[in-house]
Length: 83
Image (cartoon, rainbow, N blue to C red; front, side, top):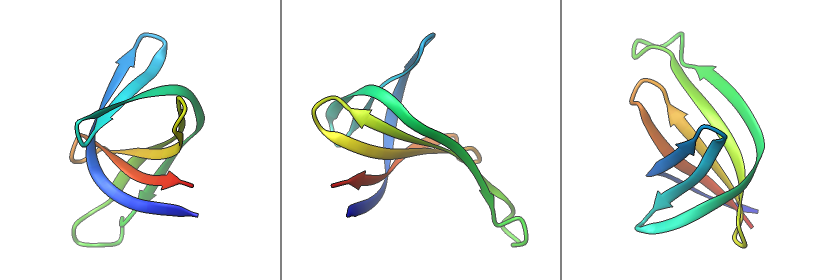
C-alpha cells in the first residue's frame, strides 16, 4: 500500500547524483535510486503538455518514496510513500 501526498520538497544533488530531500522540515537521506522515468501527458489539453521526471528512492532506514520534478513549475514534489 501507499499514501499520496503531492507536496513540495527540496532536493539536494551532488556530482554523484541525488543525495537527500527535505519535507515538512525533516531531512531524508537517499540511500539509492531504485527507479527513474519520465512521463508526458496532457498534450491534448488547452493548458498544454506536462512533463515530469520521476524517481523512486530508498530512504535510509525509512522506506521507499516516489519523488517527481514538474518541469514547467521547476519544482520537486513528494508524490508517494510506500508502506
